[in-house]
Image 1 (cartoon, rainbow, N blue to C red):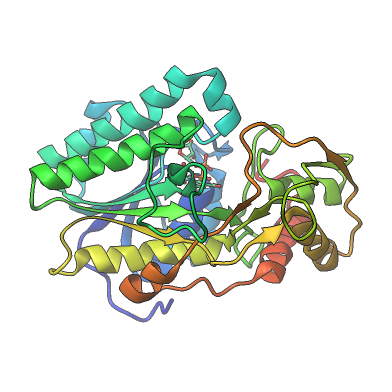
Image 2: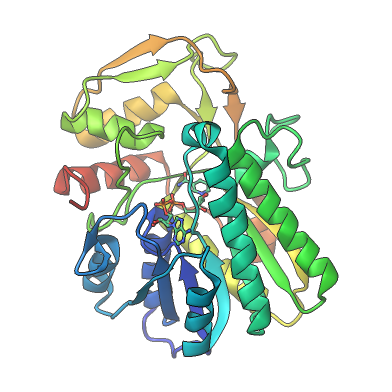
Length: 354
Ligand SMILES: NC(=O)c1ccc[n+]([C@@H]2O[C@H](COP(=O)([O-])OP(=O)(O)OC[C@H]3O[C@@H](n4cnc5c(N)ncnc54)[C@H](O)[C@@H]3O)[C@@H](O)[C@H]2O)c1
């Protein structure tokens, strides 16, 4: 993105701006001369100087100040104060709890935070006349694929097997209902496949607390010596090498997808609710990712083949053509770049942001 263009009108409110996807998107927004206000309740961030460390680093990376407030989206008064202080034109809504496993153990917290918090946010947006939303959704809304690749017309909600996935689906439904009730509301829901990688600078990246739930951070922690080996769940799937196949997308491509969504939603012809897949359209098996990571890092990644996990599926990948034609967006980075940038981040920051 060029930094020579003039400032866009209005302010973009980024909820969950201290998180993995949020912080990478803030970089791209600032580089493209958007005015940004980030909020976060710091529940999943390393903090220094009262701010997510990720955003301190975004400031270094971009040479620009990040306006940040510690705000919980479940608190309407705090949210309202932000809307009264800034001329917000659009909201990009990332703030959520995101662990599938944890959501099966504490479902009420997930519904309260993700669904209740989003409902609050939308109410405050509505009260303040801000009716343009880019929402962080997930391929989990499709549940078990009835056909591949997954297109945006695939049914959603029916096969969601865990509370986390259901919260993503319910919030999409709230967005649809808002657009039906109020013709001036606009919602773009971005259904991410598997975001991985880090900013190519190695200054910001994914920093999971505790044991990583996702494949790529787990592999990189094995490569750096923080974990002994990777457990590969299932090696008898009907895939090229028997391990599960997923559509991985580089975090920078994903972040740029949000800027494309902002352009789309800001065009006068855009109306109502629209969902877009953000993926590459091709799948890689667990063992292919592992081999690509070994190549990128020059390290051996020990692994053990173990039983399948209940609820896992063999293969999942996107049809990303709608985003290409409607948003003028395609994922440009391949698996080698995803692994290279993950390793660069991990190697420069063996303990993440701490
Ligand atoms: N990372 C993925 O693999 C993935 C895949 C699909 C969808 N998503 C969605 O993308 C969004 C961002 O995910 P991420 O990977 O960056 O997660 P993350 O945990 O790194 O970021 C989420 C941020 O939201 C904040 N937050 C949580 N609850 C909040 C609340 N009530 N009020 C204010 N802030 C709150 C957390 O402190 C955190 O900084 C989430 O909505 C997630 O569901 C992520």
